[in-house]
Length: 322
Ligand code: DGY
Image (cartoon, rainbow, N blue to C red):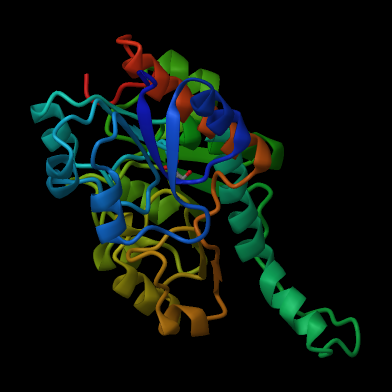
C-alpha cells in the first residue's frame, strides 16, 4: 500500500525544496509555466495532504472546503496576505511561511529601485539605446544625491532593518516608523531614530515600505500621506502593492507632488496601469524582491521543511497561525 503523503505544489519551485519533497512524498505540480486557474486549483487540491502555494493563489474558504482533509498550507513567501489565516485556524490547518532567507535579496531590490529612481538609470538606458546621446552635457539626466540624504523606513522588521543597514554605506540619516518602537539601546545599535508616520513622511528624502499587508496597513500611503512628502522625495515599495493607494500615487507622480517612485509590487498584480507605464519618474519591476537563484532555492527548502514537519506530526519551523 502506498503510504507516501500527497503534496500538491501549485508551481514548480527550485530544486532544493522539490527534491526534498519528492524524496518522501508523492508530489503533483500544478503548473510548470504560468499560474494556475482558479478551477484548476480547486480541482487539484482535492485528495492532497499538503498544499504548497505561492502568493499568486488566493487560499480562502473555498479552497479549504474543496479539501476538508488538508493537513498543511505552506506558503512560498514570507508574506501571507493571500491566505485566509482565520479560516485555516478555525479548521486547525497550520499555515507556514518562509521568513529570513529572503531578507537580503529583498533589501537589495529596494536599494536597486532606490538607486535607479534617484539616478534615473532606466531613463538613461532608454536614452542611450535610442541613440539620443549626442554629447556630454552638464545638465543631462540629473538626479538626486543619495549619499548624505535621509532614508525613511516604514515597517522595521527584518527587511526594513536590512534596508536601514545598507544606508550606513551611504552616510544616510535613517528614521523609521513601526507599530512597535524599538528600545533606546536598539535604536542606537541600529543607528536609527523613531518618527511618527506624518513626521517621517515630511522629513525623508527616500521612503521605503516594509510593512505586511493587513486590514490596518491597506492604503497606509494615500493622497494625504503623499501630500506630506517633499516634492523632491521618492517612494520605494517592495512590500505589497496595496500598502499604497495606487491611483493617488499615480496622481502624485503625474502632478509632481513627489519626485519619483520605485515599485516592485502593485495593487492588482500582474496588472500595471497604462498611466503608470507612461510616467518616466517611476521605475517598475514585476515583483522580483526575492528573485535570486540562491534565495528562491532557500525559500523552496523552507517551504519543503515546513510541509514535511507537519506531515511527520511535528511543529513546523515557521508557523504563522500559532
Ligand atoms: C514574499 O515572500 O512575501 C515576497 O513578496 C515574494 O517572495
